[in-house]
Image (cartoon, rainbow, N blue to C red):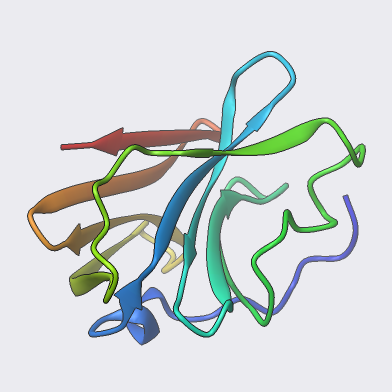
Length: 129
């Protein structure tokens, strides 16, 4: 992995609209990240970093980040939401931190869906309801 991107507070995406929501999977089908794409083609990526914390990376593009390597071994897969032309509203984001204040998870309310992302023992965990 390259050096850790600065990362952002997950609360910055509250109130935005999502035009696409992807799992980023490796060649074995393991989910390594969640990517939410906005109408301007920027995106936010949630993934676990090498320190086992959850990284929230706001990006100006919606491609697979270069820190997910080796290149070519990751693909985007839709989570299957029925997304209208004007997108889905991100109604709220609830971060979860550990005892030292490191971000370890987030619950993201996207219209009627609840997306939970977590770092569990250094592995990325995704749940969608």
